[in-house]
Length: 353
Image 1 (spheres, rainbow, N blue to C red):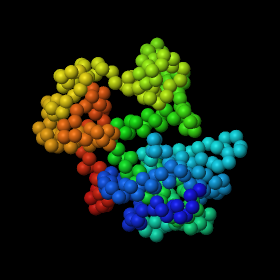
Image 2: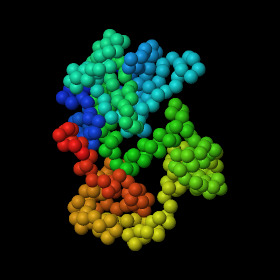
Image 3: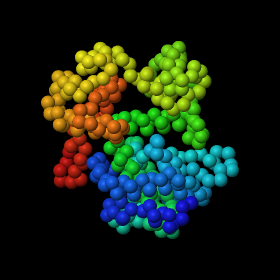
Image 4: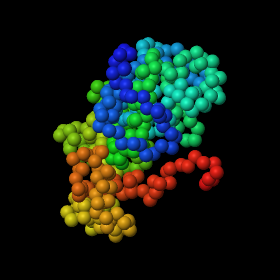
C-alpha cells in the first residue's frame, strides 16, 4: 500500500466541487499542469490501494480488498486479498461509463446535506466520513453503490478526484475510443484479465460474434475471416489462439462490409479508399443537408475533434477519412440528429417539461 506521504505527492489542490452532477455532460478542458498532475494520480490508481467495502444498512465485508484502475478498459477493479478459499478471489469490475456520481461521504453529508439512510447506518457512522468514498452507478433508473473505506483522508480524496476526472473524460470520449475500450473489455472478458499474454481461442469467437455482436455468420465464413485477420496481425498461418490485434481485426472485418459504402457512398471517394476533406464537405451538404458542409472552418474543427483524441497526428486543417472511418462516423454519436443543447437539464420545478 502507498504510504500517506506518497499519496500527498499526487494530490491536486482541493476543488470546491468534488462531486459530479448526475447529468453533467460538458466537462471543462484541463490545463496542461492539471493533466500532468492527474497523470500522477492515474498511475497511483493503477498501482492500487487497500480498502474495505462497506454495505449500506448491512454488515460490511470484513476482508481487505485491493482497488485498482485499468487504463485500457476504463474500469475499476475490486479484488479480495489472500484468496485462499475457492471463489473468494472473484474480482468485481465497475465500468466508469456507468458511474454517475462520485464524492466522499463527508461531502455528501455536510455539503449536499443528504442524510436519510446514510445517517441511520450505525456501522458506517463509526468511521470517519472523510475516509469513505461513495461511487454511484446505474444502467437503469435506480442508483447502486460502491462504498469504500480508505486508510487515510488523502487517499480517499485522491481517488475521488481521479475517478471524477476519468468519469467526465470517459463520457466525452470520441467514438473511436469508445469502441476501442469496449472491444478490449470484451477481449479480456473472454481471455481473462490476470494473464500476462491474454489470448482468445478460436472456439470462443462464434459465441462472441453471435451473442455480443448480434451477427449471424456461418462457421466457414468466420474461419476464413479469422484466418485472413490472423495472417495480417501475426504473420502466421495457424489460428488456434489469437491476440488482441487479431481479435480486433476480425471485429472490423465482420462489421465493415464494403458493400455499404460501395452501394450508397462510393461517389464520395475518388480512389475507393479515402474520403477527402472536400468530399466530406460534399457529403454533409448533399446527403445530410447540414450547413457544416458549406462552412469549411466549422467542418475542419468538427472532423479534427472526431479524430484527434484517437490519432493526434490527424489534427490538421483538412483531415481525410478512410472508408472504414467514414462508415464508423455514419453510426457514431458525433453524427447523431440529437441536439446536444437538450442535454442541459434545468433543475427548476417551476419550469415543467
